[in-house]
Amino acid sequence: MRDPSFEPLADGAFLSRRQLIGGVALLVSASAVPAAPAPARTAKALIAAARRQIGVTTAYDPAYTRLAFPGGDVPRSKGVCTDVVIRAYRDAFGLDLQALVHADMRANFAAYPRLWGLHTTDRSIDHRRVPNLAAFLARRHARLPIPDSPAGWRPGDIFTARIDGRLPHIGIVSTGRPGTILHNIGAGTREEVALFDHSLTGRYRWALDG
Image (cartoon, rainbow, N blue to C red; front, top):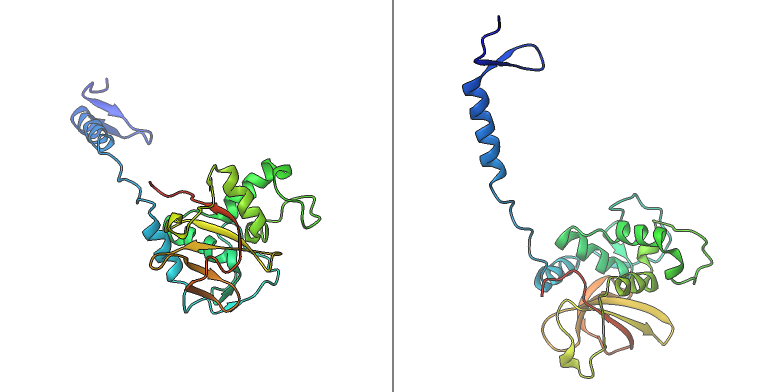
């Protein structure tokens, strides 16, 4: 007859009731420990992540490149304006716009611009196009009115604009003088007072606390 003070294990061995009760108590106490809070998604962290690209991304290269998925990127020495935003959100908060935009476009393809004659998604390029990022952010209820004055912009805001009234552009509003932004407009990532240099088309504030 089996000793009732022992319980069988899956491998045929036995565990004493004292060990069993102690293990259960350990599991209960462990589950009672609250999980560590997620890092605050602050404008300060987003801007710092974008600033770290200065001197690293030194060239503008709009060539199509097939990317890994998820987390795909071209070499950080180069990129386009959207890459400043994509890399900042990945580095600061672990938010992968490549995967997020791809998933939303697959489920809601008709909600995105039809500017490139595509009939399906392309996870290598969709998230790197300004109109697609603008559509994604609007669908996340992140779109805000464009302020009437420079003081209305807040650090961490994402802006979209048209260069010469036609070429879409995007970047992040930084700190310092009103109109200071982080962007790549042709010579790599840089920080400068240039928010009002081109016709603004949108303002967005996404995934930031407060």
